[in-house]
Image (tube, rainbow, N blue to C red; front, side, top):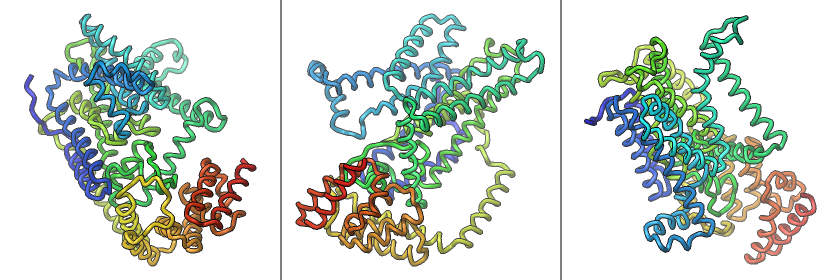
Amino acid sequence: MQMRLRRTPLDFLLLLFFLALFVSLGVSYSGWLALDKFWMLTGAVAVYYMVTAVPRRYALWVAAACGPLAAGFTIFFITADLWHGGLAFAAKFFTPLNRLLALRLFWPLLLPHPNVIAGHIALLLPYTVAVWLYARRDKKKQLALVTAVCLVLSLVGLLATRSVGAWLALITGLSVWAFWPLSGWLAASRLVAVRPLSRRAIYGGLVAILVLMEFVAVWLAVTQNLPGGQTIAERLALANGTWRLTQDYTWLGSGLATFPSLYAEYVVVIPNFYLNYSDFYLDVLLELGPVGAICLLAIWAGLLWLIVGALRRSLSRPYPHHNTKHGDVYWLRWATLSSFVVILVHGLVDDSLYGGLGTPLLFFTPAMAVLVSHHKDKEKPLFFNKRMAWVTAVLLLLLAGILVGFRRQITASWYAYRGAHAMDLALFADWPSNRWRFGDDTTLLEPARLYLDRALQLDNHNRTAHQRLGMLALWEMDIDTAVFHLQQAYAQDPTHRGVIKSLAYAYVWQGQPEKAYPLLAQIPEAAQEIEIYASFWYQLDQPGLAEKAAVAAAFLKNNP
């Protein structure tokens, strides 16, 4: 097999995404973590070009590698889980295993979170199913047996992770594939003989019903406190908080590998390590900014364009096209569409491809879409035509009009972004500090204060500037100033968790508990934290503040 790099329809978009990564590396405060994530995502681009360099006649063997890879995820997860559960004594007999699993204990960012493992397995499973179908068709018993074993192991691993989001994503992805033969059977059956429907109409109806059922199930789980509803509600709250963070970094993003600290400091308002991931799209928007997020969405749109076009060409051939030598990529095309649906659905509730340090499989499905479509080396990149040129020109004109019409607010947003970035550089040099910042020297935060003040001079309704200045005032024990700024931030966004919590504590320290209690009631951890604050203020020789904290703690304890 001779492999060579080829031009692909997604080259331009991948280049823009890589440039967004490079810019995000420059603005990140996290240093070596950002560099690690940069190289990991650069590896994802390399994997894309390695897969697309494979001749299409060998696409089946690329897909065949997905089964052992998914099974490997299962074995690693179960082994690491047993290690974490108390079987560490077994590792002393296997030094390499000991070193490998030790990473799980001592480096939280490499912790194989069940949702991350489940997302990878669900992404690869459709290809394993396709290879198993081909092996059965061609009577390749050994390949069928190996693939079946990998399929069973993958399903066991998926169940072991207990990731409902991954299960839902996989069911949706495989259903999108299975509905096509089902719609063909329905179209030919007597069930629709009274009012004949086309196969495509039936297929569209089945997909629409599935999506509607999933939305209804999620709504019922959250509103009726069904099993799993609390977890879904927590994920929605996490996404809501991340969306608020993206509004603070609307220009160039917050930088690579910055989500955990930003969410902890400005949304949860704790000085401790808070490792968690939001949904895929908001994570990208936060760290890479609008340009990076648009590039990624455009890559997904290009993937869908390629694979739907390839499937339409396959379906236009005489049936049964997948039983001929010309149909060796037919099931792989459906597997690619199924894998893409898995990414879309799972990305709404979790982030297995980009969160943390990212993954080399980020662009694997787009690469498979290019590989199994009728791609030619001289084919022009997607979106490069006269129609798209006119659309781009119109959008640029609209953007110019917005920039002119809202120039003060936009300029204020830029200064608020600069202030937020300067604040991050000063705060997170030694993060996590594991202690509240009250009474700390804020000299390093003066550049941030200047930017934030400038933002308010241009737009007094800028929530980011008010929130950050309120937090600075709290740390300096200028309670009245903190209350003023946080009240303004609350007026602009009364559902921002970080603003609610900071304003509630500011009211307590100011001696206005009647205003603080309705806000504290919205913060689940407030009752426990306020008790810690009581002893914290005694340690800082602030008996007045300690007494206020004790009164608030008693009220919350008696009024849960």
